Amino acid sequence: MNLLGRENEVSNLCRGLSSAGNMRCALVSGDSGMGKSAVLDATGVSFLAKEPTGLWLTPGKTQNLSPAGWSSQVARRLQCGSSIPRKAVNSFAQAMGKAFATLPHSISPGSAAGSQTFAEVAKVLVEAMEELMIATGDNSFAPVFALDDLDQYHPLLLDWLAQDLNLALRDSKPFKNSRFLFTAREKNQRVSDFIEKFGIERLHEFPLRPLPGSLCLKLFGEFSKERISAEEILKRSDGNPAKILNLASKRINLESAERKKMSGSNQNLRHDFGKLSHQQWSHLFCAAYPNRINRYTLEFFCSPRDAAYCFNWIKRNRKLAGVAPDGDVILKPEIREQIKAIHAEKSPDEANAREELSCVLNAFMDIFPNPNLHWIPVNLHLLNCFNRKLCQAVFDGPSYEEIDKFVDEYPEVFAVDGKQYKMLDEAKLITSRFVEIGGVQPKDGLVEEIKIRWEEDQRNAEAKRLTMEQERISLIAEEEQAQNQIQSLGNLKQKLLDDFRKPKNFKAKRIYTVGQSRLLIILGIITIGVSLFADSIGSYYAGAGIFLTILGFFWPNVEVRKPMAAGAANGPKLAIETQQRSLEHRIVGLKNRVSSMSGSIERLSSELEKVNSSVSVPYVSEE
Image (tube, rainbow, N blue to C red; front, side):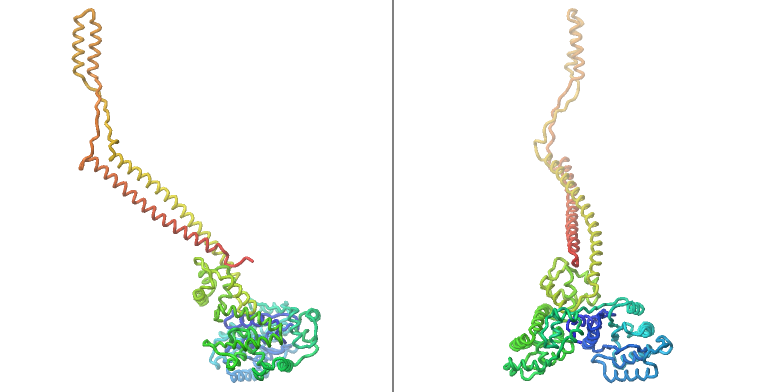
């Protein structure tokens, strides 16, 4: 089955089921002919190319197979990584064949997969795989069970898988984290019940959609010379790859057609390149697009297996390319342009598609050349902004350390505002396009997890902001009171000093007192005495004498006094100096207090700005 249009599914499955992925179970669904089995097989090839110690367990046709028959097929069809000796795998398959030879390999009416007959099959299978791990000297990998057409399994076999095999795997320390890949036409009730019974918490679903018109035309053109429009092919096949292949009336000999075309229009190039096979031309058509050729970049243009062959072939052919110090291969510019021209002439649609893909890939690789770190920008580009605290909370310890170093190593990619980082729009756009063309995929559930973290940080920031704002208001009020006290004490100090120093403040004062006037008393007594001897004026002189006598006893006195000017060692100056020192001491204490409060207010204002800025922009877009 041609995998045209299913490259993203294969890439995502391989990445998720690998040792570095977090996908425990996946289901590929689609109508008959959509390519479910082809996706499963291609995922196995890609998986084992990346996992040298991996195990890929997939039986063949499973209709009416018993647990013993199913286990025998799994053992015989076992696929493994390059680090596992083939001899050990063959010995394992032979041992399993002998162990289950006496047991029925099909389910007949009346048999029960959960009966005592098959009770030990799962245990024997798992123990044999553990011995295989010991024999290969590696006990770190877990197998991937790839079960095709799960919805066609016999109910008794499904019960055995969900009970006996599931229990044996969970009891085995190396295999308790085994991973599973299923295919089915749809996630019907039977499949859902099995997955629930198996105890799988999260199922990653990959529904295969019909191919669009452009891909239908491309697939049809690879197997037929007939001229037909994309709309007609789509109408007659409903975008089903199997129906498109059946619709193709004739198959063409690609190799001979290619050689004929090469000899007719590119004789000089053929002379330059020599006699190349169809496979070698295919390698060149893949290697001409990435700027730096390695297995990672080639996998964007062909399968992992073909990428490995292509890389090794190009690397050995020094006439076509040179090898960089880091091991990457760089195709010679003139050869690269010639190959692109040939490809554009032979397959213009494919050449245009690869040219667009290479533009994104090359731009992304120019910014982030290390493939092992591509997962970092792929995850960070989903965020409007982030900080190290957020990364530490969302990612595990080793991942956070890599992100921390990555941010420091690529300062030109991020805009920094305080403690907030934001990926620049250009880098974000290129990274987004890189994900779309089948690059590394973001962490599952990252956006939802960060949204939850954003809401928590907002609540914490709001509580912290209220506390700091109240403290700031209190400090401002206390500072204002202290400033008023300083001003009041300063005015008092200056008044005392002015009163002491300025002469106009030392004015003469009148002091009023009541005393005796001897003269008036004597004059009053004499007047009273004279009145005794003068009859005509006696009464007049007597009244005047009494008045004078009384006035003599109560005579008012006015005394004008001037304050004494302070001398070098007298009392008033010492008192003034003491008051001045006391007031100055109080003023200095208040000023120190005001200075301390001003610093606290500035610190709180700065922290408030940081708190506000830290949650002013959502971590992720609300779109």
